[in-house]
Amino acid sequence: MQGVPDEDGPDEDGATRKMRFLFGLRSQGVIAPRVLEAMERIDRADFVRGIFAQRAQEDVPLPIGCGQTISQPSVVGLMTQALDPQPRDKVLEVGTGSGYQAAILSLLCRRVYTVDRHRTLVREAESVFRNLGLVNLTAIVGDGSFGLPEQAPFDRILVTAAAEDPPGPLLAQLKTGGIMVLPVGQSDTVQSLIKVTRLQSGYDYEELRPVRFVPLVEGLAAD
Ligand code: SAH
Image (cartoon, rainbow, N blue to C red; front, side):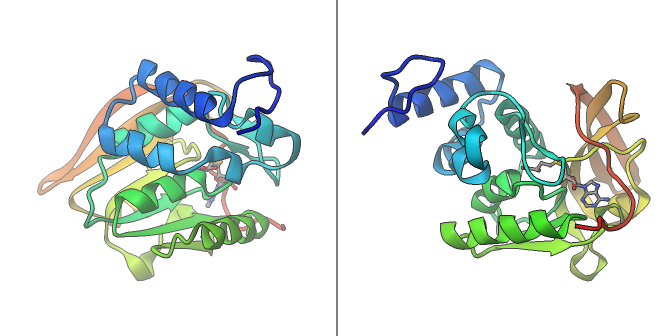
């Protein structure tokens, strides 16, 4: 395989980069075998355009269209691991962005719905999903803070944009025993990643780690 020159050295080929990528995930605490396997199969370079595609294997967030970003792979891995998706699960992702996170979820669950307020991002993600043959994955244009009532309830909900508090409709659309992982906090200050478990009698909240995400914005975007 021909190596693409990058800052790690001109001779590093695709296989070596992938190994370093997986090693990097493990060193950041992504250890669940199913999650690592899914992240090995989905190539982040398919979800990043232009000059940034060369940096797809680096553990950094990268710009995508519409002023948004694709998250750092280690954060994607840790969120997926915290979500603990099961093979029979129906999952909602809020914040399709590039579609990378949704594609990983699609390998781990029965059915994935992903919603974004930017039509352009949803269209681009859909075309990547089609090219990869991911058929259990549907991308929808909408304001994800209202969830997706027509497909609710969900076994798992993953939100990849930060709200001040967990949106009520999302809490309501979670099955009993279900798990939601989301960043909360004010957009320009430190946010926390939290894991919400719906119990028979209410909700359990666990704080996982500090994170930084773009804000969850109300309404549809113009593009
Ligand atoms: N999960 C993405 C990264 C998400 S970036 C990936 O794997 O690439 C956050 C995304 O949340 C952005 O695309 C933004 O448009 C979207 N977003 C923000 N507020 C939203 C809302 N209310 N409903 C749906 N999507 C929203």
